[in-house]
Every structure is written in structure tokens, then in C-alpha cells.
Image (cartoon, rainbow, N blue to C red; front, side, top):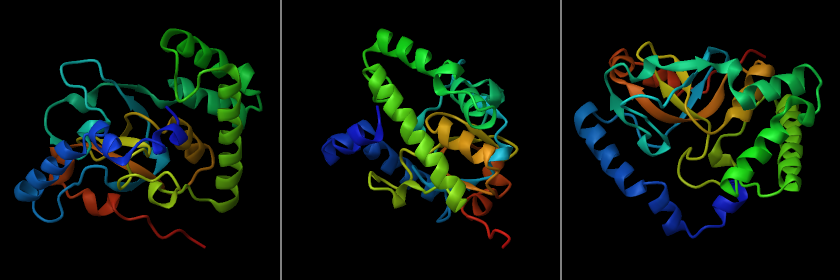
Length: 227
């Protein structure tokens, strides 16, 4: 589902779909357990895109998704993953923006159409025209980010909803390293290709070891870029 279709939904329905009531209770529990600087659901964090080397795998007994944003968890859930450059959308961005292939040549258009054939709608697209229009918008986004050297956080975008909800979903592993965990493949790929210092992301799950090591202040800092 695309940003436009999501933002058109009534706010109360969106809050329920996004699990905001449960997230609010999680925030309260985190504050009681970890203090006033505890992780918050849908929190805006800033990450070095080049540190994202793997995509989180949801295969296994625990599968953390966007609705689990802000959860602090132990265990080995963070040790499952695949290389970031093997991700379909990331690979397509590399082939398009770096190698100069058309979106059709990268195979992403046919991949999207295959998903649409199975599901009826995918990433807000129902037709080939929708898919091509989506990738025209991604081209424009790339040009804008290349010009400004900055990806906008969700709070600065017209379709903003709650904190950084809808941003690049990032889990934080036991070593404090970011894992791509959901939406935002294209945005992350663009940040990597353009070698941005930091990109905005939505906090997903965070491993308790990373929390205990004091990672949150760094994640909350956009960073001061050299001029």
C-alpha cells in the first residue's frame, strides 16, 4: 500500500491498524522498566546506511514486525538474516542508479506485476501503470536526495502519521548494528548509493544487549556533518 492510500484513511482506523493502543502500553512499560530515556514505539532514529549489511529474516519462532516497534528483547532473533544487496528492491536500485539499467531491465517491474497477480495489490499498485508511476516517483526522490544530501524523516512529509511510523523499519541487533526489517528498501538503497552520513528510520525491535550498552543516545542523534 502506498503513502497516498495510507494517508487517506480515517485517523482512528489508521491508529487501530498500526497498533497504537498496544504501542502506547508498550511505551509505558518501557518507561517503567528502563526509565525516562527508554525506547519508544515508532521512534525516529538515525542510522549510517552503510552499516546495514543484512535484512532481518522473519523465519523462526520470533518474527518482529512494524507493530512490534519499540520492543526490547533478548535472545537470538537478530542472528537470522540475508545480505542487504541480495534484497530484490535494493538490488534493483543498484542496477538502476549505479549500473544505468532501466527499471524494466532490473526485473523489478515484472516482480511487482507477479506480486500484483497473486495479491491484487502490492505496494499500493494495482496495474503496470501504477508500478511505472511509482518508480518515476522513486527517480524523483533520488534526484532530490542527491541534491540536498538528506532523506526527510516522516515528520517532515505531508503523509506523516505518528512519530516515524512508515519510515525505514530498522531493528537493532545485540551489537547495536542496524538490520533492515521492513518497508523503506528503496530509501535505504538510495542512502547507501549516495553514501549519506545518516538516514532517518523507524525503530523496530532493539536487542536488550544493545540497550544495556547505551546505544539509544547515538541512534537519536542526526549527527553533525562535515561542511
